[in-house]
Image (cartoon, rainbow, N blue to C red; front, top):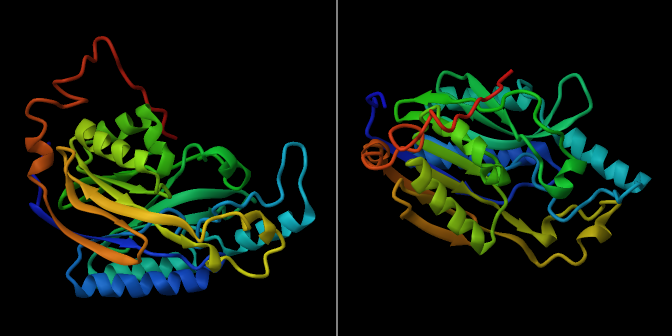
Length: 307
């Protein structure tokens, strides 16, 4: 690993509830949290999966096998209209905020293709110079495939930072072993996971990945309340049986040894702050480097097709 420019990263993980189906209000809330985090000296600010315009948990937009409904199509179009074009107005604001404040910002968003009609579950990392990189989720999970398409580009982008390479995998992409290795091969020191996983098994997963990759695992989960869904959805009956707290959060940070830097936070909106010792990712590789001295490239190799 190359020498890092800075050995401490002051990180802020925002655990918050997006404003469902409303990109303007979700963006406004994002900018408020960025301002708060910057005022608390954050250098890297992380938001959850699909924070703009929210994760429509429990909805299927009227789809069933071999069938769809016009009310569901209308709700999907509403979500489509609330989705964001990379490089559009919302991106200009976020890039401007990153540049003004001199920070890195990672945020999940529903990406609307600028040419076609497909949505993608995406994550963007903005840099202090106003540039950004977008990662599209490789394989939407389960019924997500009814809403978002498979990534057709931007598979494993890496952002070079003073703390080493930073990358992201979205939610259950982290259950794709080869996708994890694709990031490890790029030397990531900070592995950002924007997700919607409040189940206890996920906590075991994230600790394993931190140990496996010898990196900091940033578990960025969200709060979703049943009462927060728009009242005028055509398919509102789809969420009738959801619990009052649809997603409980559980955001936390894991160090390269699999230990909690910050414990999981449940059922509340907050910003989690931590100072990450960036000496650890290299030090932890002394006895185990999954893509280095603990690998057998003569036996096993990963070939990544990046367009």
